[in-house]
Amino acid sequence: MNAASFYAKAPKHLVAVDCIIFGFDEGKLKLLIMQRKVAPMAGEWSLVGGFVQEDESTNEAAARVLEHTTGLDDIYMNQLHCYGDVNRDTGARVISVAYYALIRIKNHDKPLAREHGAHWLELHEIPELIFDHGKMIEDALAALRNNAQFHPIGFELLPEKFTLSQLRSLYEEIYQKTLDKRNFRKKILSLDVMEKLEEKDKTSSKKGAHLYRFDPERYEALKRKGLVFEI
Amino acid sequence: MNAASFYAKAPKHLVAVDCIIFGFDEGKLKLLIMQRKVAPMAGEWSLVGGFVQEDESTNEAAARVLEHTTGLDDIYMNQLHCYGDVNRDTGARVISVAYYALIRIKNHDKPLAREHGAHWLELHEIPELIFDHGKMIEDALAALRNNAQFHPIGFELLPEKFTLSQLRSLYEEIYQKTLDKRNFRKKILSLDVMEKLEEKDKTSSKKGAHLYRFDPERYEALKRKGLVFEI
DNA sequence: ACAAAAGTGTTGCGGATACACCCATGC
DNA sequence: GCATGGGTGTATCCGCAACACTTTTGT
Figure (cartoon, chains in turn blue, cyan, green, purple):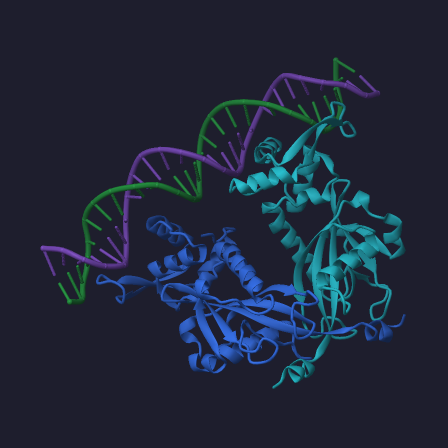
């Protein structure tokens, strides 16, 4: 067989990307879910997605879809899994590459999202989704939990400046269990990956809590010492 | 937009699967690598792969490709990652879904593999590979290491009956470090996921070593107790 | 008798957990 | 002055790492 026929005789497929978009707001982990505009399943709840174009990588397609609905670029995004069952999409055979993204919910373009029929829902509010999107969310949650335990990705969900209480409640929300306040502080501060700011946040207490900022350089230093970030 | 044009106007892509096939033989971790038959890069070293057909899922395609080169079905296989860069394949735009497989090297159909130009090579013997296949192997190794630490997948690489020394040397090979004999025995035996057989293996010592067999039921019991397999 | 691999226990240390009270401030 | 969340230290426990000698048997 020559090269031309090797490639030419292989079938071609529609390839989509679907994004599981996590946010953290009011102490709750939330997902950006939208109402589908086209048949089949028009009006049903679905993840944000789109087709991979000729001239873009799957990663680029995911970033494009994400920017299109949230107005944000340069956000934390990870490939989750490729979903390749023949009949997973009831409209046509579509192979879908799923990505999960972590965004600072306050930064995104809310009107833009609304325009696309997108809503932020807490985990327990998520309705039945089309196709295998429910499974994708399950898998994304598992991946988030695995990943958050050994990598400093929680910070991607918080504002740039945050209090230790906010950080702790984020991890409590991710792992769905309460964490001891003193032990948590000891652990995270011992890693020395955050800069303590002079500023205080007084929105949630009279006394005010110190603000911190994640410092990528300190994190690099930690890794150079051969230590691993672990919550 | 109606449904027909929604799907119809999206571009279609060649989708391939590539398999990183691990085996364990003579105390060494090995990979099944083949020489490519078609242009471009004919004669160069590559992973085992093939195109996803219309009527098969990506998982099925990977299983088909695997059986085609090794004669084995029902083997342990995991999706690794989807590689979607536009120019990753120099012959055409191909999106590739990579899988890694763990096989009992003794069980496979060696003549069949040879017929396909496939060879078992140790990690340090692996030559330069085409496209992004080298990166795929790197990623597969990292995934294997992560996965083997918390899931009983090492057994997939050993014969059904094996000695503790064999098991230990497998993990030493995977993690590229020596493990303390006593601590390893204590740890693995405390998990109680293996059945100790009466038989002994005398091929590697005068005294003979007890053979063990992995017992999926005991592993399920371990999980029910809420404990995790960990090496 | 000796070589070669199998098999076996104990100790110390470090990190994880459990736990309760004082502090600063706005109202 | 009191209610609210912020901030702090210690004792215990458990799992991991380090470590060396005896057993069996084929030659």
